[in-house]
Length: 601
Ligand SMILES: C[S@@+](CC[C@H](N)C(=O)[O-])C[C@H]1O[C@@H](n2cnc3c(N)ncnc32)[C@H](O)[C@@H]1O
Image 1 (spheres, rainbow, N blue to C red):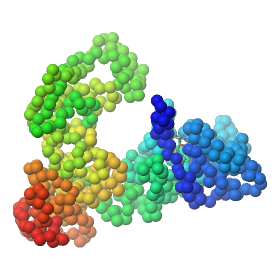
Image 2: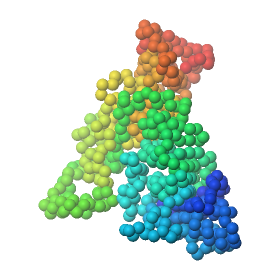
Image 3: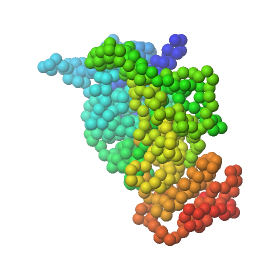
């Protein structure tokens, strides 16, 4: 590997996004220290934080510069850095700045997770079992590594030590474990000040960390407008004062109470006063169950693009009995490890000549063309950014209920042999693109096999079928995307469980609901006839209006016989004129051109 490549790999592995000096200095300036304070920077980098920290402490002492620096670096400032080069850079920065580096200091070149801090430097004696009292800090400050890799040789131990707090899982991420360990090292009343990725504010897998922070003290989170040239990832400043269980946090200057955070299924810290009302009813998960789809392992073998109603099949599939061998089983095991018991069992199987049914994928002499639909294929639901409905774009070889694909999946050289979403294969529902900035929701007809790039949702047992159309209508609104991307999960992924956590639009009146259901059915029909909807179509604006929040008390339920307003659509592609909704009896659609009135849909 070239030096540049090695540097890049190290940077990624150690999450090395150094804080610009100006930002670190500004944050340190917001703190007030006394001579009795003890500061820890657990991932020093080249010293962006410790330099201004040392400067501040120097002002608190009398004597020569050397004497003061000796005091500060033995009594007040502590630091750890894993990377040898950055560690050296940090020490030489101190030396350059003050022309002197005390021989005795508290900077350690090591993995923060391997460091134990003891009070021996304070003259404390070990206790009866030979342990020193743990050293606690009044401040832990810095910018912990983000997206780095935890040392694999101690990953399991770290998971055991930091992976659970108050019965909640803490996500195995460098910065979340850094936060947990730092909280443990913080004295009562102490303050944590970290720059970190904003990812932990909403995603469900960081719920445990958010809960932990709120059990430890008062939290304040502020968006950092601009971090550094090195990354455009959004960063925040996390401040915590360790003074016990708290019912409030402050995000960007706005106080939020725990009870409001708890309304969101993911304990979101991005809930705001104006959004609370949407979360005061049931979540979509009470109506629909969502699921991710499968990963085939090697799409090329089984998944074909449909072009002009046909696919090209280059392969043939043959089943055979594959001998079981220990070498092969180790290849398939998690981290290449098997228990002694399992190894013994496999050895016995190998000696007895045991086999496992497997599938062989063979290239045909000449590819064959297959017109779709065909009995040996099913439509395959790949992620795409179409909305409302899109014709099938792919088919998967699914002879005998997917025997070849499922057998391939079971025998592959990966340790997860399960098939995601299998119980939902072929069910009618709705679906969206997994990685997207908006909820690109569309109707999923029955009969599809599900791909992991397009999670799906299906009505729960006993829920009326019309709810599917109502919820699809809701999923197509900008408000729904806003709640999803601001409150539920602001990262690029839209997971199945994120969908279940969205609010069910309980505030929509029965009349509006009926109109939405009829309208969405018609939109699907016209999409099936070839219309490609975009977010700019009037039908989408019409839907958005139907889901505008109405305080429950003021929702007027119209008597059943009153005719409802239905949108006019189904107009010819490319016709950009605006149509006024007309009063029609339900399920009857007609068109009536409107003279560019701003009240149109
Ligand atoms: C995001 S950088 C921040 C550095 C410095 N705190 C700053 O603000 O400029 C994270 C630092 O953590 C270091 N690091 C990564 N894993 C570490 C570990 N397990 N223990 C100690 N330092 C680590 C990296 O080498 C890198 O210098």
